[in-house]
Length: 212
Image (cartoon, rainbow, N blue to C red):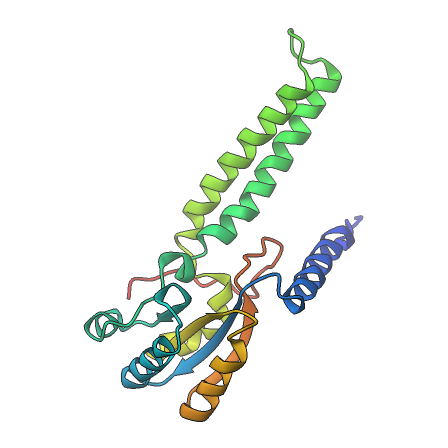
């Protein structure tokens, strides 16, 4: 039995990761810093301190199972876009839907299989419909999955800890890191990422969303 090579797919993933890293270094995307706090009080103090430094709610989110605690302490919680894989899975399914419909439409167009004439516009429209349908279906599937970006923090969240996400620019990144290092040394820095949602990035493991 012949095995089909995955080299083109792997090359696409490698290229996308390399491109994102280059743009990341050039400041093309907003950075997102990830911290894990052990308790609600620490999360409250981080929120107050960073807000006093000009970090708005738009750039500050906390993801935890203790939603009621965040509400009582007026801490800006993560949105469904942060928590669920809606956009990421939607993008991936949109690409698949568009590709399948493009191949089918192009084959029909070139073979003249239909009793009426088709044009390149018809191919493009069918491809667009396939992409939109794929995005819709992927978004529905994404509602049942945790966001691939929070996959590394799944165990911490399940253990009741607080994932603090701070979106920073080149101008205030160093200041935020300094505040966190000096005033919150016990809060674990877990890395940084871009806010870009990369459809070529595959999670190592898919966690299905459960009711907290």
